[in-house]
Image (cartoon, rainbow, N blue to C red; front, side, top):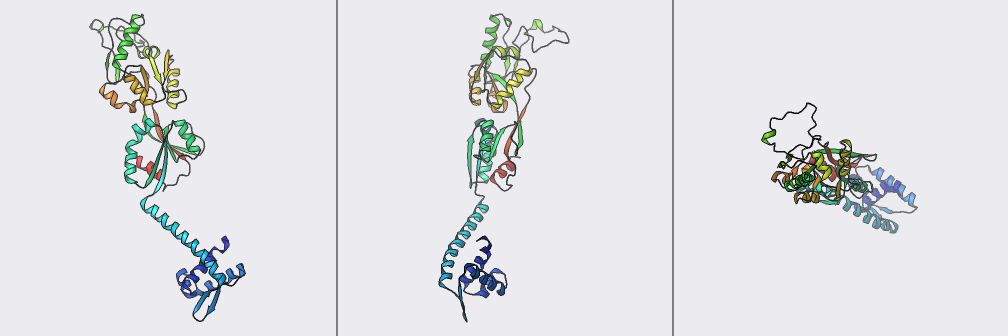
Length: 340
Protein backbone atom coordinates (compact mmCIF):
# COMPACT_ATOMS: atom_id res chain seq x y z
CA UNK A 1 0.00 0.00 0.00
CA UNK A 2 2.84 2.42 0.84
CA UNK A 3 4.20 2.09 -2.71
CA UNK A 4 0.78 3.06 -4.08
CA UNK A 5 0.28 6.22 -1.97
CA UNK A 6 1.26 8.54 -4.80
CA UNK A 7 -1.06 6.68 -7.16
CA UNK A 8 -3.91 7.08 -4.68
CA UNK A 9 -3.20 10.80 -4.46
CA UNK A 10 -3.41 11.15 -8.23
CA UNK A 11 -6.55 8.99 -8.38
CA UNK A 12 -8.23 11.07 -5.68
CA UNK A 13 -7.51 14.34 -7.48
CA UNK A 14 -8.79 12.99 -10.85
CA UNK A 15 -11.96 11.68 -9.19
CA UNK A 16 -12.45 14.95 -7.31
CA UNK A 17 -12.03 17.19 -10.39
CA UNK A 18 -13.47 14.67 -12.90
CA UNK A 19 -10.71 15.74 -15.23
CA UNK A 20 -7.20 14.52 -16.00
CA UNK A 21 -6.08 17.96 -17.13
CA UNK A 22 -7.40 19.72 -14.01
CA UNK A 23 -5.82 17.07 -11.80
CA UNK A 24 -2.49 17.59 -13.60
CA UNK A 25 -2.69 21.35 -13.00
CA UNK A 26 -3.40 20.95 -9.28
CA UNK A 27 -0.72 18.33 -8.82
CA UNK A 28 1.83 20.28 -10.90
CA UNK A 29 2.58 17.28 -13.09
CA UNK A 30 1.96 16.50 -16.76
CA UNK A 31 -1.24 14.92 -18.11
CA UNK A 32 0.65 11.86 -19.39
CA UNK A 33 2.06 11.37 -15.86
CA UNK A 34 -1.48 11.45 -14.47
CA UNK A 35 -2.72 8.94 -17.02
CA UNK A 36 0.27 6.68 -16.35
CA UNK A 37 -0.38 6.74 -12.57
CA UNK A 38 -4.05 5.81 -13.08
CA UNK A 39 -3.10 2.94 -15.41
CA UNK A 40 -0.52 1.64 -12.90
CA UNK A 41 -3.07 1.76 -10.07
CA UNK A 42 -5.71 -0.05 -12.13
CA UNK A 43 -3.15 -2.70 -13.02
CA UNK A 44 -2.07 -3.10 -9.40
CA UNK A 45 -5.65 -3.39 -8.14
CA UNK A 46 -6.78 -5.50 -11.10
CA UNK A 47 -9.87 -3.42 -11.79
CA UNK A 48 -11.01 -0.52 -13.95
CA UNK A 49 -11.46 2.69 -11.96
CA UNK A 50 -12.54 5.25 -14.61
CA UNK A 51 -14.64 5.29 -17.72
CA UNK A 52 -13.22 7.71 -20.25
CA UNK A 53 -15.44 9.75 -22.53
CA UNK A 54 -15.49 12.91 -24.61
CA UNK A 55 -16.51 14.97 -21.58
CA UNK A 56 -13.81 13.63 -19.32
CA UNK A 57 -13.68 10.72 -16.92
CA UNK A 58 -16.27 9.20 -14.61
CA UNK A 59 -15.82 6.70 -11.81
CA UNK A 60 -16.78 3.09 -12.30
CA UNK A 61 -18.61 1.32 -9.50
CA UNK A 62 -15.29 -0.01 -8.19
CA UNK A 63 -13.76 3.44 -8.55
CA UNK A 64 -16.56 4.97 -6.50
CA UNK A 65 -15.91 2.51 -3.65
CA UNK A 66 -12.23 3.38 -3.65
CA UNK A 67 -12.95 7.12 -3.85
CA UNK A 68 -15.32 7.05 -0.85
CA UNK A 69 -12.66 5.41 1.32
CA UNK A 70 -9.88 7.69 0.10
CA UNK A 71 -12.03 10.78 0.62
CA UNK A 72 -12.42 9.89 4.31
CA UNK A 73 -8.69 9.21 4.58
CA UNK A 74 -7.62 12.46 2.92
CA UNK A 75 -10.16 14.44 4.94
CA UNK A 76 -8.64 12.98 8.12
CA UNK A 77 -5.14 13.89 6.95
CA UNK A 78 -6.28 17.43 6.14
CA UNK A 79 -7.83 17.85 9.61
CA UNK A 80 -4.62 16.57 11.21
CA UNK A 81 -2.56 19.09 9.25
CA UNK A 82 -4.91 21.91 10.24
CA UNK A 83 -4.66 20.90 13.89
CA UNK A 84 -0.87 20.82 13.74
CA UNK A 85 -0.80 24.27 12.14
CA UNK A 86 -3.12 25.51 14.87
CA UNK A 87 -0.86 24.04 17.56
CA UNK A 88 2.22 25.65 16.04
CA UNK A 89 0.53 29.03 15.67
CA UNK A 90 -0.71 29.12 19.28
CA UNK A 91 2.26 27.33 20.82
CA UNK A 92 -0.01 24.57 22.11
CA UNK A 93 1.76 21.65 23.75
CA UNK A 94 2.49 19.90 27.04
CA UNK A 95 5.34 20.28 29.51
CA UNK A 96 5.79 17.77 32.33
CA UNK A 97 8.25 19.10 34.91
CA UNK A 98 9.76 17.18 37.82
CA UNK A 99 11.07 19.27 40.71
CA UNK A 100 11.17 19.34 44.50
CA UNK A 101 8.70 21.55 46.33
CA UNK A 102 11.43 23.81 47.72
CA UNK A 103 13.28 24.25 44.41
CA UNK A 104 9.99 25.09 42.74
CA UNK A 105 8.93 27.61 45.38
CA UNK A 106 12.21 29.40 46.01
CA UNK A 107 14.15 29.09 42.75
CA UNK A 108 11.99 28.39 39.70
CA UNK A 109 8.64 29.98 40.57
CA UNK A 110 9.31 33.43 38.98
CA UNK A 111 10.43 31.76 35.75
CA UNK A 112 7.39 29.48 35.69
CA UNK A 113 5.19 32.54 36.09
CA UNK A 114 6.80 34.18 33.05
CA UNK A 115 6.65 30.94 31.06
CA UNK A 116 2.92 30.54 31.70
CA UNK A 117 2.29 34.17 30.73
CA UNK A 118 4.13 33.74 27.43
CA UNK A 119 2.84 30.21 26.71
CA UNK A 120 -0.79 30.23 27.88
CA UNK A 121 -1.74 27.28 25.66
CA UNK A 122 0.92 24.90 26.99
CA UNK A 123 -0.43 22.38 29.48
CA UNK A 124 2.03 22.51 32.39
CA UNK A 125 2.19 19.59 34.80
CA UNK A 126 4.46 19.76 37.86
CA UNK A 127 5.42 16.54 39.62
CA UNK A 128 7.12 17.19 42.97
CA UNK A 129 9.88 14.74 43.86
CA UNK A 130 13.36 14.69 45.34
CA UNK A 131 16.33 14.83 42.96
CA UNK A 132 16.79 11.06 42.84
CA UNK A 133 13.09 10.39 42.27
CA UNK A 134 12.95 13.11 39.61
CA UNK A 135 15.73 11.36 37.69
CA UNK A 136 13.85 8.07 38.00
CA UNK A 137 10.65 9.70 36.70
CA UNK A 138 12.61 11.08 33.75
CA UNK A 139 14.05 7.65 32.93
CA UNK A 140 10.56 6.12 33.09
CA UNK A 141 9.23 8.71 30.65
CA UNK A 142 6.78 10.20 33.16
CA UNK A 143 8.24 13.73 32.84
CA UNK A 144 9.91 15.71 30.06
CA UNK A 145 12.46 17.64 32.12
CA UNK A 146 13.69 17.76 35.71
CA UNK A 147 15.04 20.56 37.86
CA UNK A 148 17.46 19.01 40.34
CA UNK A 149 20.51 19.41 42.54
CA UNK A 150 23.69 18.53 40.70
CA UNK A 151 24.54 14.83 40.88
CA UNK A 152 25.82 11.95 38.77
CA UNK A 153 23.48 11.10 35.90
CA UNK A 154 22.79 8.01 33.79
CA UNK A 155 24.21 7.95 30.25
CA UNK A 156 22.40 10.01 27.58
CA UNK A 157 21.15 12.60 30.06
CA UNK A 158 22.30 16.21 30.06
CA UNK A 159 22.56 18.53 33.06
CA UNK A 160 22.52 22.32 32.57
CA UNK A 161 23.49 24.18 35.76
CA UNK A 162 21.23 27.14 36.47
CA UNK A 163 22.60 28.77 39.64
CA UNK A 164 24.57 28.11 42.82
CA UNK A 165 22.95 27.33 46.15
CA UNK A 166 24.58 27.41 49.58
CA UNK A 167 24.00 25.02 52.46
CA UNK A 168 24.12 26.57 55.93
CA UNK A 169 23.14 25.82 59.53
CA UNK A 170 20.53 28.03 61.20
CA UNK A 171 18.82 28.30 64.57
CA UNK A 172 16.83 30.82 66.53
CA UNK A 173 18.48 33.34 68.82
CA UNK A 174 16.71 31.87 71.81
CA UNK A 175 17.74 28.29 71.09
CA UNK A 176 21.43 29.18 70.83
CA UNK A 177 21.20 31.25 74.01
CA UNK A 178 19.57 28.40 75.93
CA UNK A 179 22.00 25.86 74.49
CA UNK A 180 24.93 27.97 75.69
CA UNK A 181 23.42 28.28 79.18
CA UNK A 182 22.69 24.56 79.37
CA UNK A 183 26.13 23.48 78.19
CA UNK A 184 27.97 25.98 80.40
CA UNK A 185 26.08 24.70 83.43
CA UNK A 186 27.43 21.23 82.73
CA UNK A 187 30.98 22.49 82.42
CA UNK A 188 31.30 22.36 78.63
CA UNK A 189 31.12 26.11 78.08
CA UNK A 190 31.82 29.28 80.02
CA UNK A 191 29.32 30.71 82.47
CA UNK A 192 30.65 34.25 82.01
CA UNK A 193 28.69 35.55 79.04
CA UNK A 194 26.03 34.40 76.60
CA UNK A 195 26.50 34.75 72.83
CA UNK A 196 25.51 37.95 71.13
CA UNK A 197 23.78 36.85 67.92
CA UNK A 198 23.10 38.87 64.81
CA UNK A 199 20.85 37.82 61.89
CA UNK A 200 22.82 35.76 59.44
CA UNK A 201 25.71 34.94 61.81
CA UNK A 202 26.60 33.65 65.25
CA UNK A 203 29.17 35.94 66.89
CA UNK A 204 30.37 36.60 70.43
CA UNK A 205 30.35 39.80 72.41
CA UNK A 206 33.89 40.07 73.83
CA UNK A 207 34.15 41.12 77.44
CA UNK A 208 36.15 44.33 78.06
CA UNK A 209 38.55 42.50 80.38
CA UNK A 210 39.59 40.22 77.49
CA UNK A 211 39.77 42.87 74.79
CA UNK A 212 43.57 43.05 74.80
CA UNK A 213 44.18 39.35 75.24
CA UNK A 214 46.66 37.88 72.71
CA UNK A 215 46.90 34.32 71.50
CA UNK A 216 49.57 32.25 69.74
CA UNK A 217 49.78 32.47 65.95
CA UNK A 218 48.57 28.87 65.57
CA UNK A 219 45.51 29.45 67.74
CA UNK A 220 42.48 27.44 66.49
CA UNK A 221 39.50 29.71 67.09
CA UNK A 222 36.94 27.26 65.74
CA UNK A 223 37.84 24.36 68.03
CA UNK A 224 38.57 26.50 71.10
CA UNK A 225 35.69 27.00 73.54
CA UNK A 226 36.25 30.59 74.71
CA UNK A 227 34.81 32.32 77.73
CA UNK A 228 32.09 34.08 75.78
CA UNK A 229 30.34 31.68 73.33
CA UNK A 230 30.18 28.09 72.09
CA UNK A 231 32.14 27.31 68.96
CA UNK A 232 30.24 26.27 65.85
CA UNK A 233 31.69 22.77 66.20
CA UNK A 234 30.35 22.51 69.75
CA UNK A 235 26.94 23.73 68.64
CA UNK A 236 26.72 21.16 65.84
CA UNK A 237 27.88 18.32 68.08
CA UNK A 238 25.74 19.19 71.13
CA UNK A 239 22.56 20.67 69.70
CA UNK A 240 19.38 19.01 68.54
CA UNK A 241 20.53 18.87 64.93
CA UNK A 242 17.73 18.67 62.34
CA UNK A 243 18.59 17.24 58.91
CA UNK A 244 16.83 15.87 55.86
CA UNK A 245 16.56 12.10 55.52
CA UNK A 246 19.67 10.10 54.62
CA UNK A 247 18.37 9.27 51.13
CA UNK A 248 18.19 12.96 50.20
CA UNK A 249 21.00 14.40 48.08
CA UNK A 250 21.24 17.49 50.31
CA UNK A 251 21.68 15.27 53.37
CA UNK A 252 24.48 13.39 51.63
CA UNK A 253 26.18 16.72 50.97
CA UNK A 254 25.91 17.67 54.65
CA UNK A 255 27.15 14.25 55.80
CA UNK A 256 30.18 14.64 53.55
CA UNK A 257 30.89 18.00 55.17
CA UNK A 258 30.72 16.41 58.64
CA UNK A 259 33.08 13.64 57.55
CA UNK A 260 35.59 16.00 55.94
CA UNK A 261 35.64 18.26 59.01
CA UNK A 262 35.53 15.46 61.60
CA UNK A 263 32.31 16.74 63.15
CA UNK A 264 30.33 14.16 65.11
CA UNK A 265 26.75 15.27 65.87
CA UNK A 266 25.40 13.79 69.05
CA UNK A 267 21.68 14.05 68.36
CA UNK A 268 20.05 14.08 64.91
CA UNK A 269 16.37 14.55 64.13
CA UNK A 270 15.44 13.64 60.55
CA UNK A 271 12.80 15.72 58.75
CA UNK A 272 11.63 15.02 55.20
CA UNK A 273 10.80 18.61 54.26
CA UNK A 274 13.09 21.64 53.93
CA UNK A 275 10.36 24.14 54.82
CA UNK A 276 9.74 22.29 58.08
CA UNK A 277 13.45 22.43 58.87
CA UNK A 278 13.28 26.22 58.56
CA UNK A 279 10.07 26.44 60.59
CA UNK A 280 11.36 24.17 63.35
CA UNK A 281 14.56 26.18 63.63
CA UNK A 282 12.58 29.43 63.83
CA UNK A 283 10.51 28.20 66.79
CA UNK A 284 13.61 27.19 68.76
CA UNK A 285 13.45 23.44 68.23
CA UNK A 286 17.13 23.06 67.30
CA UNK A 287 19.73 23.72 64.61
CA UNK A 288 18.73 22.98 60.99
CA UNK A 289 20.81 22.35 57.90
CA UNK A 290 19.07 24.25 55.11
CA UNK A 291 19.70 25.89 51.75
CA UNK A 292 20.35 29.58 52.37
CA UNK A 293 18.39 30.68 49.31
CA UNK A 294 15.26 29.04 50.80
CA UNK A 295 15.34 31.12 54.00
CA UNK A 296 16.31 34.60 52.83
CA UNK A 297 13.26 36.19 54.45
CA UNK A 298 13.81 34.50 57.84
CA UNK A 299 17.49 35.43 57.82
CA UNK A 300 16.69 39.02 56.93
CA UNK A 301 14.13 39.51 59.70
CA UNK A 302 16.17 37.60 62.30
CA UNK A 303 13.73 34.74 62.79
CA UNK A 304 16.74 32.48 62.36
CA UNK A 305 20.47 33.19 62.40
CA UNK A 306 23.25 31.53 60.45
CA UNK A 307 26.08 29.75 62.22
CA UNK A 308 29.39 31.20 61.12
CA UNK A 309 31.60 28.27 60.13
CA UNK A 310 35.38 28.35 60.01
CA UNK A 311 35.13 26.08 56.97
CA UNK A 312 32.00 26.90 54.94
CA UNK A 313 30.07 24.11 53.28
CA UNK A 314 31.06 23.96 49.58
CA UNK A 315 28.39 25.47 47.30
CA UNK A 316 26.42 23.35 44.84
CA UNK A 317 24.44 24.02 41.68
CA UNK A 318 20.86 23.33 40.72
CA UNK A 319 19.74 23.03 37.13
CA UNK A 320 17.80 21.28 34.40
CA UNK A 321 18.19 17.64 33.42
CA UNK A 322 16.77 16.12 30.24
CA UNK A 323 17.43 13.30 27.82
CA UNK A 324 19.89 13.92 25.01
CA UNK A 325 18.27 14.84 21.69
CA UNK A 326 15.78 17.37 23.06
CA UNK A 327 13.55 18.94 20.41
CA UNK A 328 14.60 22.59 20.12
CA UNK A 329 11.02 23.62 19.31
CA UNK A 330 9.45 21.84 22.30
CA UNK A 331 7.92 23.56 25.36
CA UNK A 332 10.80 22.09 27.40
CA UNK A 333 13.33 23.96 25.26
CA UNK A 334 11.29 27.14 25.53
CA UNK A 335 11.31 26.94 29.33
CA UNK A 336 15.04 26.30 29.51
CA UNK A 337 15.81 29.10 27.05
CA UNK A 338 13.66 31.48 29.07
CA UNK A 339 15.61 30.75 32.26
CA UNK A 340 19.04 31.47 30.77
